[in-house]
Image (tube, rainbow, N blue to C red; front, side, top):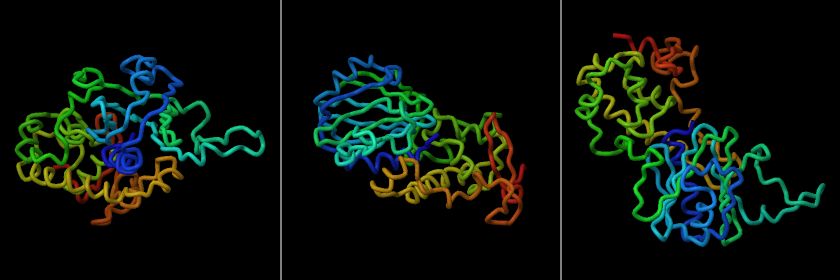
Length: 293
């Protein structure tokens, strides 16, 4: 599932390309993808609206309109948002003399929502597993639908301090890895970056949160924003590269220190990285740098 750095990448790539552009037509191929309101109302209310800006909250994408309505989108596990250029939309398949395949590798039938823009381009949402969801909130409408209201602070918020972490997590017996995944405490951290954060902080993923000392919370408070900003920077990609990679080349893989590297030597101490399961989630750590106690 895309985590905060990946969602930030999607926003940074697409936002400059769609600001000030009007939505000419909306097509919903799978009504269940629109969680609120119904698909028919979703299409009607978006038609003719002008896109103002994009934002991010945790792992949610936000698309603000000039009328102060807001499209909320969660990509979930396999969702992908692509801006299809007008020249490609006009291309013809020489074999069928029909429209050229615009899926960019997405299996046919998995493009669920299409926003046709007034400059000839299309903003397309594809999702092979169909877990992604849209919500449309009108001006002044309270969001009781998407779950954004339950999110904790952003990792870059000044409130993210050692004292904040200890006050929210310091009495929990739950493993600290699972605590970092709790979106009601800190929004946006998932399985990948919790491993990277704990490695950088030198904390064993299975360690109960109530066993951490103040020095541990201080390291976490410093490392969380630092690591996420690092991967946002490494994920930078041009619009052309993003389109060609089907929106999935986030470029962070060469910079991951432990995630996905079980059985390999630790980049710090050369100990063999190990894999464990914490709260049902796979986790990779260094037994030399992240001792149990």
